[in-house]
Image (cartoon, rainbow, N blue to C red; front, top):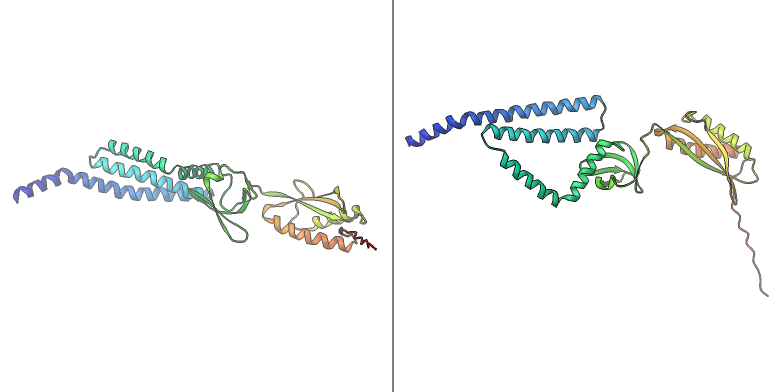
Length: 270
């Protein structure tokens, strides 16, 4: 019993300081990492960084710092980390081969977050799928459609598809086509259209003034091309307002819309 006690005391004297040092490293490192991540978060908020990119960088920094912390604690205990790093490297290769598709999505997520072709809150179109970006995580990008459906798209697909971002620019040009009948006065119609467009509060005079010109003489109508600029967030409000207001204004001035006529002849066989 006395021999066991002596061996235990020798063990405590030999390894106690190392264990204590490792515990102090882990505890102190834990609070330091939390402090650093909090400082990163505040800095990113001050520069108004995208929420998804903010979360990604915080997670990546936290993971890297905690791995370093674990290796530091093992070194404090006197454990060589060379073999552990070699084992982790071999395991990483095996996992990479097994999860190559997921890693492709991970790489795509990193590219999206760093290159920022779109950000959280943008309205985008990807291969015919449209919606507002609500999150960009490590593997997927999630959209919400105007009718409140969620679309989850793998990031590997996102980086290889054509993405139309409707929210990237501050202003957008609106293109409308107004059709009138051949019996109507096209000059009067253009004047009424421009007056209606210019009267709307969301219409912008820069970078170009509103535009209305005859675009095409169709089979049953004269098509007038209308162009105007507006703030991106006002696009659809202005679009629907103008479609309603232009029709009402043209009707009050006696400008008629085209009506396609069908000539039907009945031939009686005696």
